[in-house]
Structures are given as C-alpha cells and as structure tokens.
Amino acid sequence: MPELPEVETVRRAIAPILEGARLQEVEIRDARLVRPFDPGVVASALVGERVAHVGRRGKYLIVGFDSGRSLLVHLRMTGSLRYASRGTLADDPHTRAVLRLDNESDVAYRDVRRFGTWELFENGDLDPYLAARLGPEPLGPLSAAQLGVRIEGRRAPLKAALLDQRTLAGLGNIYVDEALWVSCLHPLRVAGSLDDAELGRLHRAIRRVLRRAIERQGSTLRDYAQPDGSYGSMQDEFRAYGRGGEPCDRCGAPLVRIVVGGRTTTYCPDCQTLPA
Image 1: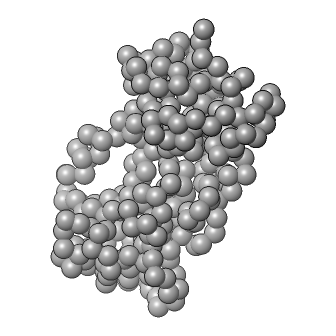
Image 2: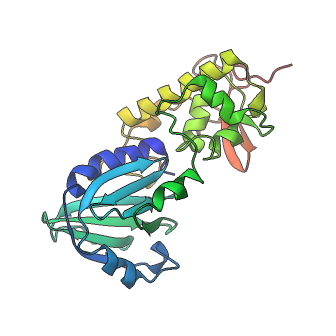
C-alpha cells in the first residue's frame, strides 16, 4: 500500500535517526527479505557501513552509505520501519530485520505480509537499475507537456497508464483515483487521447494530491504507520478512493466502483465522463 506520500513521510522521519550513524549490528530474521542472497552474508556486508543520506525514488527508500553502496528498501504492501532507543524496541512477531546503530538507536523493519525487499547495491549500480524501472518523479521538475510525452500514443486506460511506474514513479491505486477525481478525468479514458487542457488539469491534480498527502503524513488504512508509530490522516480527505456508493463531494452523484487493470477503481460517473 505505501505510495509516494507514505514513503516520503517515512523517509523524513527516519533520516534524522539514520544519517551519520554507523551500523554496529545487523540482524536479518527473514530470509525472504533479501532472497536470493544469504541473509547472514547481507547482514555481514552491512555491518560497519555509515549512512550518508536517506533518499527516496518513487516508492523505494534509498539508504546511501559513505562507501558508495546503497540499500534499496521496498515496503510493498505492509512494510514499515520503527525506531527506539537501544534495547527498547517492542517485541513484534512481524519484525523481519533490526539495525543497531552507534548512536544508541535501534531501527526495526516489520512486514506483516512479507512482500517487502532489501537489495544491496555496489557503487554505481543503483542508478541504472532504477532508471530501467521508473519514470520521472511527479513532484520533480516535470511539466504538463512532459507528462503528455510520457503517455503519448498509449492506448491503455488512463488509470492503468498512471499506475505503470515507468510513466511516473510513486503513484499507486489511492492517489491515482484521487488525482483523476480532482482533474475530472475518467479512469477508462484512453491515456494518449488527452488534449493540452486535460493534461494541464491532470498534472496539477497529481501534484496537488501528492503534496496534500505528504502534509497529512500519508494515508493509514490498515498497516501503514510512521516510524514513531503515529498514523497518517490523508484518508480523512479521500474524494474517490474506497468510497464506492457514497455521494460525490462535487455533484452528489453516487460514486461507482469498477476494475481497471486488475485494480479496484472508484470514480464519479457524472463528473468524470468519457468523451462522446
């Protein structure tokens, strides 16, 4: 579930704990986290590394080390981070790894459904890996015209095209539904058919929705929480996602739930219409 706003919220919270700290001990309790590599080998490789920066690319957290190596963390559906003073982390059967830092902090990675991944990259290997998988950042220096180039000629439904991480990095089911509602665009609209005015509306809506979600520390629906255990509140402002059958906040029509690209999608049939 964590999308760009949730991952960015986690990054902002965990960066002050990790940056400048050295990894004194690393315990990887779940081999699935680093497969196909041996967890003991990965843990040993991380011990002694000092964290230079904590970044984000799309839905990935990036822990960069002084050595030039990088640890790429993908939270997937239920992954999260927790931190506490040395030895005070709560017992949790869903903890998959623990980092013990030289600043007397412990950072735990927990994951109920165990879909998250950690990948350790050598110096110079991370950028090409990400470039092959991710489009530009939607909150970066991206114009409406550049967004148009990303979906030009695409016959896929607009919802599906925006979920494709090669179009834009970091968007998921929640914030695509919200951006399409804000921009009054139908999720089944042919992606490559948007005119300049529609592209402008979509571009503004994506950025507006993501910025607001970051301000509200993301959306807590099930498992997502910040590293201090507190919850986000963007779910209180949803206009489309998860509201099938409820009245549209703009026109009052009942919101409709359909499936697009295998994902449950909610939209307003009166505000978000397909062209004749």
